[in-house]
Structures are given as C-alpha cells and as structure tokens.
Length: 127
Image (cartoon, rainbow, N blue to C red; front, side):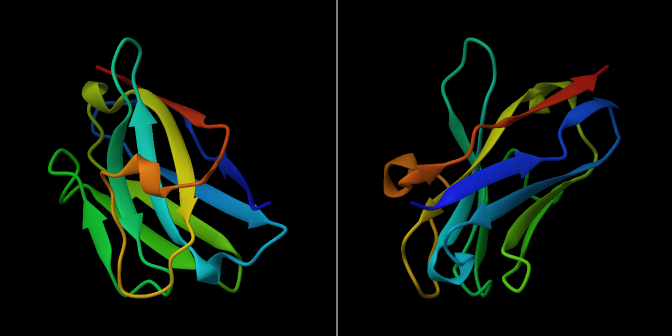
C-alpha cells in the first residue's frame, strides 16, 4: 500500500512562509493525483490544493489561492506545498493524500476520492 509522510510543519509568524513536503514510499507517485487537506481544532477537514499525476493541473481552495503553490517532483517521489503570506486561520494539521487517477485531473475538495493518507503535520501561525 502507498505510504505517505508529511514534513515541514512548524510554528511561524503571520505573514511568514513554510513549505510542506509529502514523500511517498512503496509506490511511485506518478500514478496518483495528490491532494493537501487540513483540519483545524473543532472544524471539519477541508481541501486546500491538489495536483494531477503529471503536474499539468493544480487546483486551490479560494482561501489559499494566490498564497499557496503546489508542485511535484516525480523523480523524487515528493509533492510540495509552498505556503506564503500565512495567516492565523491557516493553523491546522495538514495532510497529504493520494488519488489513484492518471491524467489531467485532480479534486481538491472531494476527500472521498483519496484512498491513502499521511499522518499529518502541524502548522501553527501566530498573530
């Protein structure tokens, strides 16, 4: 089974930046669309961004559009989420997940499409 491991979370001041990584093992990532989701305390999980299997399409939630950038390096079996201009409301546990679909498609707001999930990494933005 595909295993995903997130890293790069931490504590940052408002306006700062972080880059999250999602590394895969046991399978190559180029057969999967990858999504990033987050869950804040007391709130439902929400989709943040996604990228198609070969990186040709990326989607973003309106709340992060223009601030976050998703990218992938299939040679390194890793997907990245660069987060800029961070706000306190971005504070959450961030998860990456894999959808076994090849092609020019990904869904950032349908977590039911994603069958493999990482353990999450905490991002805390102080005001």
